[in-house]
Image (cartoon, rainbow, N blue to C red; front, side, top):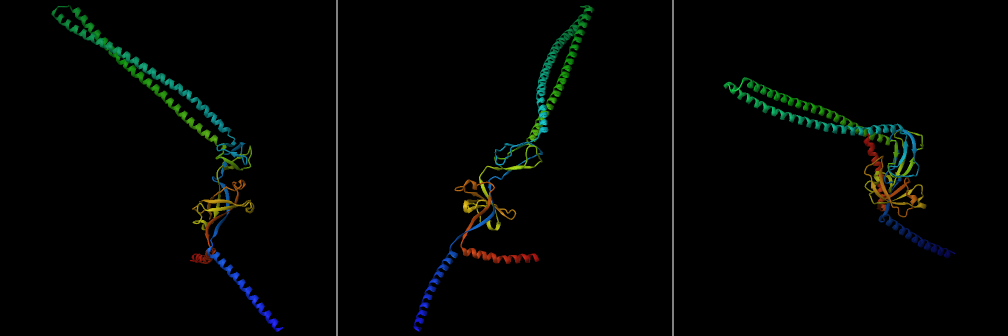
Length: 396
């Protein structure tokens, strides 16, 4: 019995040693594989943002009222496609339209008056030229007559001189000499009268010219005043029409109406009230907000990422592949804005709609688990030192 027990003990010892060596060998192999993976294999590191949204490339444009008024007509309907400049809402502008009509009537009355005044100016200028020509002709005739009278006067004086010599010698009678002097006096008087007539005609011509010029200047002032009224009325009408246009609310961009205020015909709208918004037609993009320390210098355009939609479970609908398009360089509200462009290939249309929210995972680097572990340990050890330094600084 002792021999049987000893053999059994040796068998058990032999079996236990064999299984232990096998188990330890498997453990060493697994440990080596793990250490190889831990130190030599690179894994992808993702940075996740849970604040992400699908948006069109252009921001949604609000539809607002510039002036206060009562709604007369409205075409604001959710989901309606609109074109830029299309009339969406019309406000009551009856008083403004009346002012526009009054100014249009005033403006329409000015051109006929201005045309009549221009014709009158042309007639006055023509009459002035004719009167000037008539006075010039009369003055020329008077000068011709005056020249003849001067010639006759010189002849009469010469005749008086000759007859005076003959009378002295007794060759003619005193009567003939007296008659010659009388003719000379008449010639002198006629020449003086013609000279006076020339002066009178010249004075009348100058007076008439001044009067015509003053009348033309008055007409030109009236024409200038009408031109000023025409320009003023045109500018006033343009301003009134511009003010009238404020009561017509048009679509600022082409797109789809994405939001509508609960207002209907007859409702009063205060100035600046937002009546709705239009989602512009354009390429979709993904906008996400990240913690600055984790993305600045590590996220660059062209990096791959993926978006998971909150309303569509990714296990059923999958994810949306995207690429980094732009990275903000300034921090706003403690976060950094990053824009992505989706890759629509292989993604169903319902997943690409403006306004869908979700999360974005962006690939920032590849590193081994050992490096990541050491980095995490270093950050953990650095936190108490930083907190202590800040506390010391606050005490000092």
